[in-house]
Image 1 (cartoon, rainbow, N blue to C red):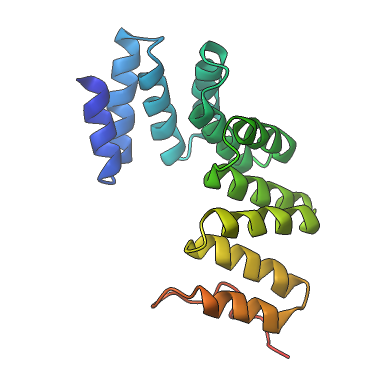
Image 2: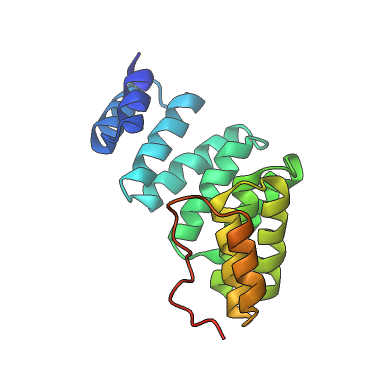
Length: 176
C-alpha cells in the first residue's frame, strides 16, 4: 500500500510527498525491489542523485539484469557528471535490450558531455531509428548536425519530424 501511494504522488508532481511515502515503505521492507526502485526514482526527481544511486545499486546487486535499475543508475551518474560510469550502465542495458530508446539516448548524452561528438551522433542516429517520431531524438540529431555546421541537413531533420508548437533546439544558431 505504501509504495503505491508514493508512486501515485510522484506521478502527479508531488515528488517530496512521494519520497516520504517511499522512505516509509523502505523502513518496513528494506529489501523490496519495487520499493527500492520507487524510492530511487523519488530521490532522483527531488534532485538527490547520490541517494538515488545508492538505491539503484542495491537493486542491481540483487538483480544483475534489472535493466530499468541499470538505466536509472546511468541517469543518476549522468546527473552527477560521472560520464564513464553512465556509459557503462547504459551499455549494460543495451546488452539486455538493444531497443531501449532511453538508454541509447542517455548514452548519446554521456558521449556528448565527454566531448565525443562522433559517438554521440551515432547514438542519436540510432535513437531516430528506434523511435522516428521522437522529438527529442530528432532534436538531438539536428543539434549534432548543427554543431558540425551542417545547417541545411540539421534543419531538414528538424522539419521532417517537426512537432507542431515545438521550437528548434538550435534556433539560435545562424543558418548560413
